[in-house]
Length: 328
Ligand SMILES: [Zn+2]
Ligand SMILES: [Zn+2]
Image 1: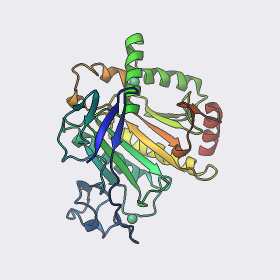
Image 2 (image 1 turned 90 degrees about the vertical axis):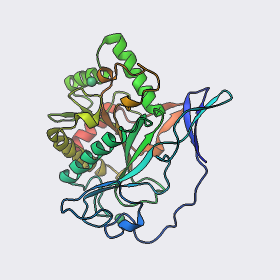
Image 3 (image 1 turned 90 degrees about the horizontal axis):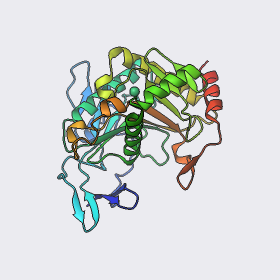
Image 4 (image 1 turned 135 degrees about the vertical axis):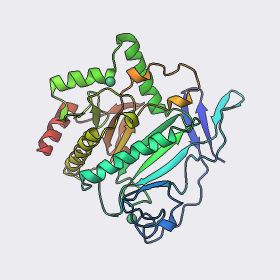
């Protein structure tokens, strides 16, 4: 039986999860068209020809993860164990299968496909946020994850009954900045970076792609919507989706052209589920103080740290210059 446990000295959550039976590795891929019966029943799929669920004919398909970290069957609620806190891992772990083609990579996915994937991100966020037991949802896209058993292109959706530690740190920073300046920190970053240009990789009508001032690793990039909004799933418009799809495609193609075609992780940061406040008023200014965005970290398994301080051997200004040149 797994638990989410809180370390009271650091405030971190830890998922204690006894290792399950790994599904046997078999030759053919369960996510390719024709193998739909080998996954759990689909949650949703885009099917333009009206084909039946759990058969071929889909362009993007969402299924529960076979060995989930979090699942909807768990009961809700925080439990005290002496001085400690624990929470049952109630939530959801889903895979968004990005297309029928097994060998597609983020760099080779065309704009139309990226657009469909972005709409599916929106649909899953909206649907999962209807569950008041879910407080936070992260969507991640890994490329070349070491040891991954899944080789078909997919994004992972993880919905949890707490706020992710990484997200909570960011939410608190954003709120403190807002309380002090009455402005959104990301809006201020966009204004300054667009004026400076030095760390900007690409500017489009709706987005700016930049290397952050304190990038944790070489070629880390953020994609920030130029229009303030706290939640991706509320803010996505057809124009913005087309613009973002083209930007992602270009950025991933640029990354793939770097020496060694580096692995990466993309994370979508959107506001937590405001229907699930445990503490009334906890995130009362979130609509003004938080700004949804994407963070893309190349080689996430090789981040170098000393006591939690990241060490980056490529100055962000130089990384941005190289990425701009590689785009061209
Ligand atoms: Zn496949
Ligand atoms: Zn903003």
